[in-house]
Length: 150
Image 1: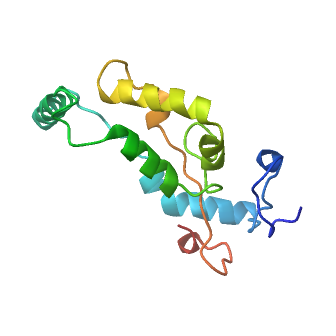
Image 2: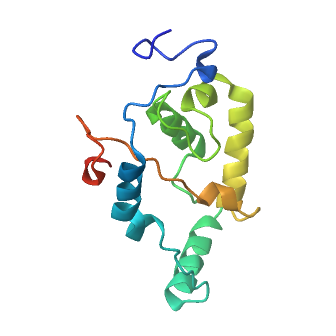
């Protein structure tokens, strides 16, 4: 299958896209220098900051209401979220494309239940779920200049 054909269907998970832009070592260094103030700055969390304490209390008060008081229909919200996800866009921290979450209902049900437990404060949110990685995506006819990436 060539990269312009549909990526859906059996075996799609094993196919990879060819890189659109090949960068020299100098271009990579320029990119790193251009973006370093954003992606290399380690944020310092102050868990006892008054604003965070206030936010936590507000979230706890909102999530500890009975399900009857909650205007959010979780099943409907879950289905809407899945419906909005494009099948073959970049996956989340789990590394699994949305196509597979939409296709395999059993694992999706387990994931949904785990997310609701985290939202309700019944389990801790794992660190890997709140970490991210930066992927530089070239804009249009990119020549490898740092400002030509998003």
